[in-house]
Image 1 (cartoon, one colour):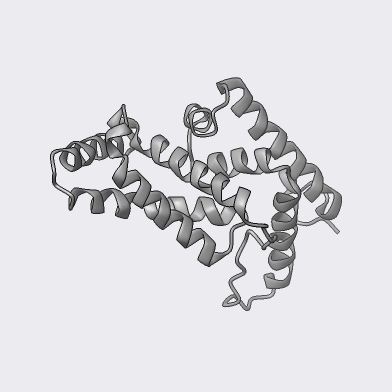
Image 2 (tube, rainbow, N blue to C red; image 1 turned 120 degrees about the vertical axis):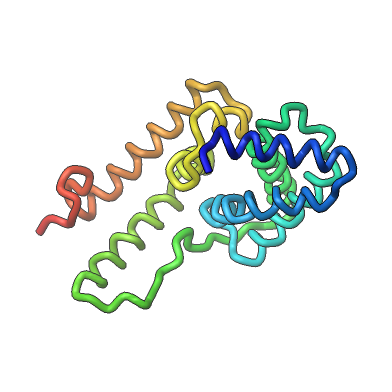
Length: 191
């Protein structure tokens, strides 16, 4: 589904919810629960906390659906609701650091050890980023949000969103280049 088609489908579902068709909200949940969960995990939340916050976000979104002023921008609005839910949670709970990348141990080919080391290095480099850079990077590169939505979700200007993504990319490149040589152009570890 294209972004335009998804926005139109979201707007139609929101209109149906506001008209009293509560089952239409299930469509919105199905469409957005996995991206919200991946976003939460990418921000360093453990599995259970990510699930809890995503669920809480949908409960809040359902209760406040009438506050979504532009139904065709439901996705951005929903991510803002999640972000605010997460920030409220973070104020009340002491967070523990977790790996932001799950390692799939099913692969057994000869490159597995090198790929595993690179994934762990990337996970460590992402975790080491300041949270504002990590968040912008994950919204752009993990979830595919355009810069305009990143700015809207995080409450910053468009130029600040672009700058945060660029700074995150550069910091990751530097961290990985220090351990793996020029990974950005070679595509693999240099000896």
